Image (cartoon, rainbow, N blue to C red):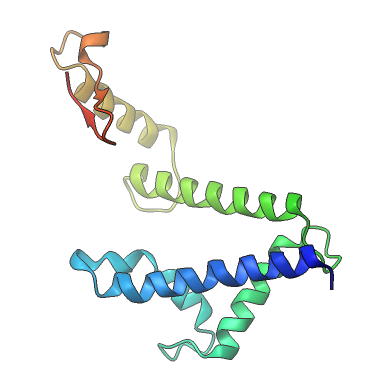
Amino acid sequence: MSKSTKLAIAFLALAGTAGTSALAAAQDGPRGQGMKMMPRLERADADKSGDVTFDEFAAAMNQRFANADGNGDGKMTVAEIADQIMRMRAERAAQRMVERFDADGDGALTSAEIESRQKKLFALLDRNDDGKIVKDEMPRHDGGGRWRMR
């Protein structure tokens, strides 16, 4: 096994371990913060027993390896790993967008749902209700990671 393949496997194992550790920590956190990690735990729990054994953990990690090995040659190149990471990020972003805009809860977005959300956002930004947004109405970044209304 090449050094790059070993590093890629170690990377995926570390990512999975970090996710599992974050799940354990988040479940004890305030306001149910662990709820975001529950689907990952449920997917790894193959026998639906409520806990994840090493075999289930290894199977889940092996699946992540298989997903990252784009051409199925048993090796993961930097490009394949990068593609998998980008795909996972894009899927999470798309999931958040659907969850945020999907008014009827059917798991899909319609143009009417998107337009409704656009109208709400526009109304929030158009603080003087004149039907236009000008620079003074736009939020500004305070440099500390927060957006503030002017």
